[in-house]
Length: 163
Image (cartoon, rainbow, N blue to C red; front, side, top):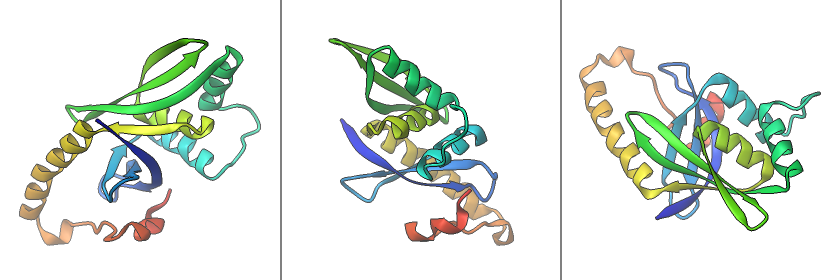
């Protein structure tokens, strides 16, 4: 089963300084953080903020190619979390044919924002993500308290961590 999500925001992991795109399930309070590269985070941020670059960036170019070839991006799906790596698919409809493209979630999300299509996450990804977080929390409790970095308690606090 899949859950529709929306991009809730971008923030920076205070421990690793790595950008995170935060996806929120529309039907519950579940959140899915996906660590992304700085260039992909920048691409997502420019689209969220509706900043128009003077020339098409990579994800803008991808959108233009798909539409010029008569295609429509129907949806993107975060399909799997394996060995701490997320996987995604992009569904493109060209005429009566549906083409499935393997993609990094960051690229799929950046494209989805540009074409205004739905983003989905499979239930297994939410489950795998929550299981992957449990051992890390146990390890963190063993570390010294002075090394701890505070994460926002509530989602509204994320604005302090924006890129």
